[in-house]
Length: 334
Image (cartoon, rainbow, N blue to C red; front, side):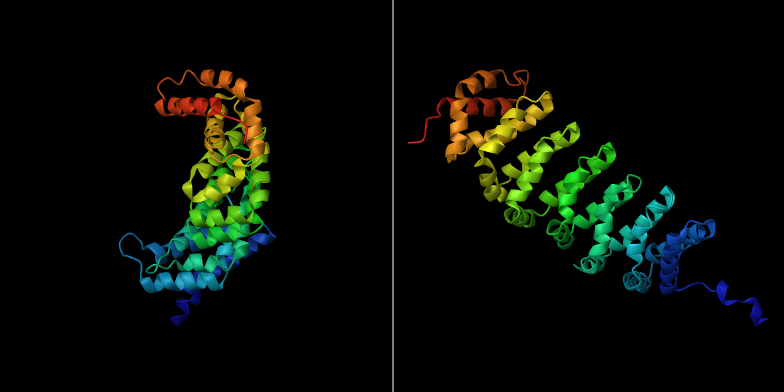
């Protein structure tokens, strides 16, 4: 009767399930078929039991370790991301949940999957380039931001050509895609302050050039988000060096002064918070001082009426009065 208990009826081990899932995902390169998709769904469900338990019993640490180690050695995480463009929404959500579960795996202070991903740049490349496919942005963008929470992964993106792709992605016509890309860009530029400063310092000229393009974008959302983020970056004490470099430029001042007259009151308001950094700087460069002096009388007429309806915003009004006094007291350099 032994023949009744075939090998196929035996429950697969964690390692076997991971390899089977990887093999099924690889089959998608040759086209979709229901059998393969059903296999993928089944394998993901079974692997999740090893990772999270079945509701009645907790997962075994040994089983979790076996799933993770096999996922690393079989390149499963790469194939999960690579398959996102061809599977349906529910399967995307399920497979990315598996990816994220492994990403959050922690042993003491170590994150083994983060360490693994730091040696597998192609996976990060796929995640970043997911912005080129609107169908996968929702899941991949969220996962990318989970990766960026870890400094060693953020560093890989910041100090490679991947970072410059975001300056195109945030201007894509699809609102959800552009907004998601901007959320990730913001995290990259603000979450790890010392790392971001290192990036700004090494890429000052190129960064300003790319960022000024965003400030002149025809996309309203991109333009508003960009000027708001610029103010946040410049006003962060960590970024004193980059702030000084930015406000030393007369071209940057001209751009921000033009944005004070933008047709959008929201963009005008956010631009004010950058403009005040130029005016409040006690060590203005001569070209910047010359522009402010040239426009002194116009500014003293313009600023008192600037957003005069914000009567309940005490901080804004105090800052505006301070700028008016600073501009009124401007004198040519001796």
